[in-house]
Image: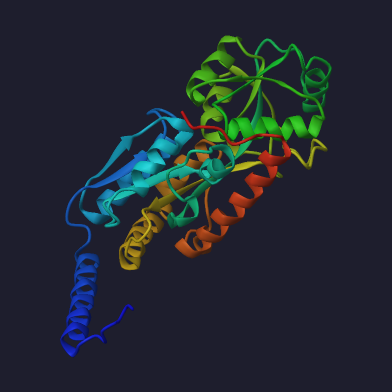
Length: 334
């Protein structure tokens, strides 16, 4: 027979004392935070659109804190390698992750995730920009309708590039495939940069890409832009029509960036990070740089940890439905 011993007064007091010490330590940590440099992980190679947003945020937030924020690129496994690095870091606010909306597609794409995406703590939403339907310069089509008709009639010949399974450009391609009702010929790359390089070189025919990466190429005349997948035009490329005016209302997709920390990070630390992030997003220099590449900062009410948490969870559900409906099966992240 097993017997249990009632806790003694000494044990109870010891437990209470330990709890008070831990609480006091966390509070003191948050009060003095930060006291050293912070690492901002970007789960993609340097030079891409997410990396550019990260370096902009790191510079401004670092000046607010008076401590450097070092951007570290941890690419691989469709962005999950960098995410895992952040999730498993000490929850003390000294390791943060800047990721795009593709983070919410990971559970539906990968069968070997070593972290729970829902457990990730949200710091805040940063900016959002639409995807753009692009084509190589050599294409003769002039309107979105002409391009889509060409894709549908030549689905087995026309190549549609993307930045890897589960990337925003891949999800956009799946959306287009579902809309056209035709199986398209996808070409996967190990990132946005290589895919765009081949589009510029005419090695692939078309692709969807986010405005942050596409607008400079469109403005430079190296590729063709057929349609902004949104309900309004982009000021810096005003001659490119949007989905609604092109009569393709169902073809809309925007990409957003957010800032995250490991599960269990103290709320006071998250609040300090969120405050520094919001100060960066209120800076006209930052918003002007966003506008130049066709993106906008989220309104203040949508930048908060709580508001972004709602968007984050809703996007997970939407991506699971979209990818599942397209027949995408979870596979091992490599």
